[in-house]
Length: 212
Image 1 (spheres, rainbow, N blue to C red):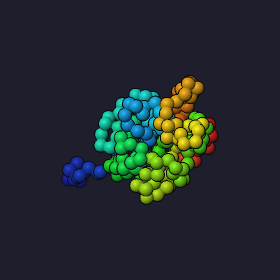
Image 2 (cartoon, rainbow, N blue to C red):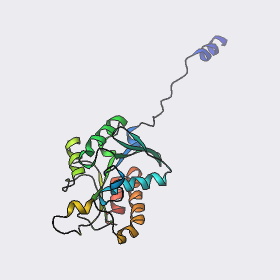
Image 3 (cartoon, rainbow, N blue to C red):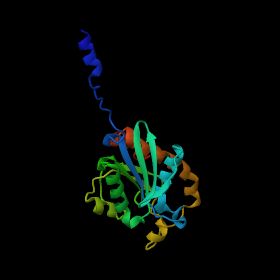
């Protein structure tokens, strides 16, 4: 009997497998599209950066300049989320997105690209699982780099109230006074929508927020 007990005490302990935090189902990459540099900070084309700044503020996180972008890490309802503001300029956004997807081991269905949209009224939100680039250079480069149009994206309407031939000036222009007044509330709602994507899922988030 004593020999039997001794064998138990001397036996190797059983190994318990614990899911790592890097479990791909719990890890997300949220990308805000924009252009780096102070002169672009308040422009319509940089709404993606603005939304990420709002999310980071809500989570009391700060960005660090790393390879190909400014990056922050947050937690939300059991999920690990990487916030990425590419510093490659809008036309080369896909390079940074692909790099961090590979670096962090994040599947394409767990990324969310936030961008401006001329075809939606100011502040209108629309999330989709896939789609065309709609003439947006950041989305175009992302599609080419990832070799697919099938990735989740969240569009923030900036309207199209510009005269013929003035599109570039408009998207690279700053918000007018009325837009500036409504922007804080719109940023809060967009941040909530982006975070909802990570815990409620794409379909539920679309049903709750699209068109708001």
